Length: 247
Length: 219
Image (cartoon, rainbow over all chains, first blue to last red):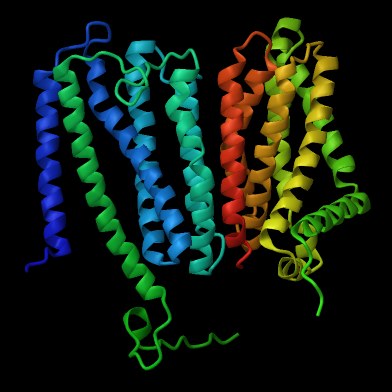
């Protein structure tokens, strides 16, 4: 039986993500029709919606892995939660920025006090708070426990963001796919959006995997060496004696 | 051998202790009441003086005052015990669920008083009616905020750095209570979706905070 190494899995994800992104680009630019009302700016949907989708997915991942960490007390789950939160924050910021760029030609302004925009910005703040909680103390395990608690409580805001366009009369258009009453969409647009979502998901999985390796190395370097182990990494550096300055 | 103290008795003991701390320090009376009064008067100046503008801002003013009041309140959740080095003793004596319930009820009572004060002042000074659904929103919205206050208060109290993080955690996380509470305080707004939101949100936050509270006590 052969096992796939992490590097080859990464390579597979990278190639799959690149191919999906290429296909999404072709579908979005050359195949999908121009929106009758919004014109060319509507094509930003093929990046804006996948970014928002990936952010939701990441935050759901933070919830699940936070619960898993509290149940198992295994730092690997905490590292997944951290990597997912970092990607989720980035994707939320990207979705807000792209929404702003999309809103300028369509609504005539960069920002409106629209419930979807405001709740998304607040969601970004919640998960920035989640990441900040990790630096509250020096104890790695305690930081992970605190972060898991915030990751669980903070998720309560995610459904509010998603359903904000259903509950409010809002400028932002209703959800086209993940909605109790999905809006009709041209099949070519739906195909471009679906492939773009796939590309973002694959790329997100790749980013999380690579980030996990960095976090694992950081945890290993920070962990105290087991008894009898030879010192490694920074601890193996020869002690540098700094001469006292004469006063 | 002594019999174990029932959970309800533990909750009552924590609650009595919170009441005693409040009686001794007069924290709510001395700090929260003037803060709420100042907030409402300044909001009236900022949003008024047109009666229609004040009416539109009334619900939001009450809920913003409540939300902002959670930040200093959260500092007091474990503040007294940490100041007098009795936090370890308390969490060793009282079961985590009972400690959470006692702290939650105390925070809820403080927020209810704050909400009544802010709501009363807004109703009188802004000359707006109080729709009955506002009371439902007030009860459950403050319960959700109390759960957040209790959870985040213990979380930040147990850390040694970034005390200012409380506001960054509490204010965004309380958004659903702010929204639903404001909508339920506004006459003419459909009640059902907002009542459902505040109910589900309160249930989710109380359960989540109760579930993670023992973890926060492991410091």
